[in-house]
Length: 203
Image 1 (cartoon, helix red, strand yellow):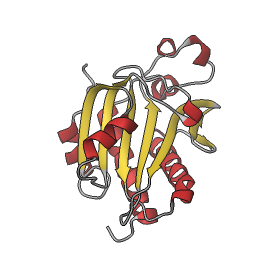
Image 2: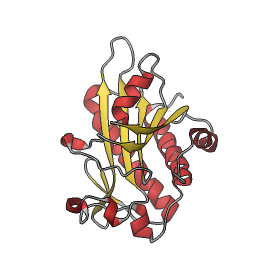
Image 3: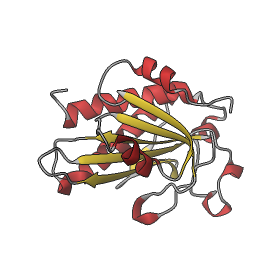
C-alpha cells in the first residue's frame, strides 16, 4: 500500500495538543469506533486516535453502513472527554463536521457544505461523515468517540453502484490524487485546535 498512513509521521507532523497525543494505525478492523474503546479501555486517554486502512463494518448515522475502500480514504475515531452533558453530544457532531469541512476548504480551496446533522458534501454529494457515540461514567468525565470518514482517493468505481450518484471523493473533485498523510496532518490540526477552543479550554 504505497500511500499507507504512518503513525509516527502523523504524530511528528501535528506537534503538541490534545488530539493525536497517541495515534494507532490498523490494517483492518470492523469499526474504529469499536476498536478505540478496546484499545483505550484500560486507561482512557483523551486524544487517542485510531485509524484503519480498511473497515469491514464501518457505520454511519441510523445504523447505515459506511463504505470504506482499503487505502483510499480516512477512517478514524478519536477518544475524547469533553466537558459536556450526554444530552449535548450533538455539539460534538457539529464540531467535527465543521472541522472536516474547514480543513477541506483550507487545503484544497474547495467549498464543501454541511448537511445536518453529520454529512459533509461537495456539489450535493457526500465526501465525509461523522458518527459521535458517548459513554457515561460515574465520578469521571463522560467518554465520547468521534468517528470520522473522509472519501479521499476513491474513483467512481470504488463506490457501490447504488451510491455513485450520492458519494464523491476529494480526488474525483480535484481531478488528481491527494497525499493522504499530508491531508491527515492538516485535518488533525484543525480538529485539535477547534476542539480545545470549544470543549477543553484548560488543556
